[in-house]
Amino acid sequence: MGRYIFKRFLGLIPTLFIIITLSFFIIRFAPGGPFDSEKKLPKQILENIEKKYHLDEPLVMQYLRYMGNLLKGDLGPSLRYQDHDVSFYIVQTLPVSLLLGVISLFVALILGLFTGALSALKRNTWVDYTFMSIAVLGISIPLFVTGPILMLIFALVLKWLPTSGWINGRGGWATLIMPVLTLSFPYYANIARLFRASVLEVLQSDYIRTARAKGLSVRAIMLRHVFKGASIPVVSYLGPAFAGIVTGSVVVEQIFRIPGLGRYFVQSAFNRDYPLIMGTVVVYSVILVVMNFIVDIFYGILDPRVSYKD
Image 1 (cartoon, rainbow, N blue to C red):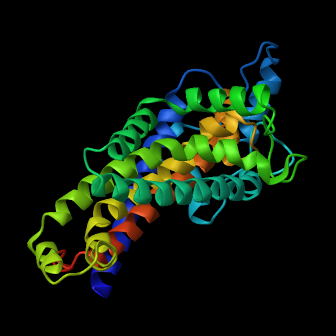
Image 2: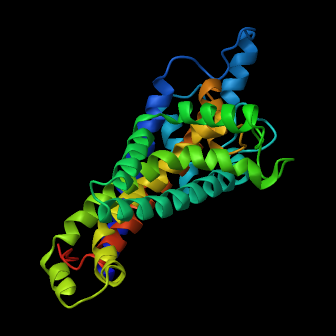
């Protein structure tokens, strides 16, 4: 198993290399530039600025310079925010996005497993139909619709929650409720549907019939036999889900004005702030491939049929 983990870990390197390389050139080929503004800069000043940030060099040279600095852990200066470099803004904002993502995924996981299992046990009853209907809504409604609807109901009409902000502001921890509900809704829906289908499949297995014949209670069968086997599809979903829920917070952070990495990602894209865009892409890419790597390891632990041999 150690050899398998080591080889899978080495496989992360070319994946990250390809993502970063493609992102670098796609961003540079996008129309517009970091210093294009309504007020046109004098030619000499523009040339001096581009020389300062090495933007006057050929694109290949810029790429090699960026990769060299990246290997040394240097993400470069921000072209828009002059006070600090890109690493500073990532360090300041990433914990906010991670906290929001972790809490949202935890809520989605708990609710999804509970309602998925209950729907499977109460198959074709009003309980099943209700939870699965909510799940369909969660998959169908995009985040930029769910967020404003919650804001309209709970903040503007009922006035129970603050409209926006973060936990270090006046609203405190109450500011987390609507962003977490918004972000976790589609992931809850997917987990509930996955777990329901998986539980139904496991319940029809021979060893479950044997357990029932032995007189085990429903609770014992679910906890001892069904939960582990049925959770395998959910575990395989959690890796991409975690990466998606962190990157998906871009929309939620914009709606609820949360000072996370997603807001900087959007602003840097509008500003054509190349180093800051690349910095956020690198961070999101690392989260995605690392979470997939961790899920592969846990998948093998949960399912003995998975072989670690090539």
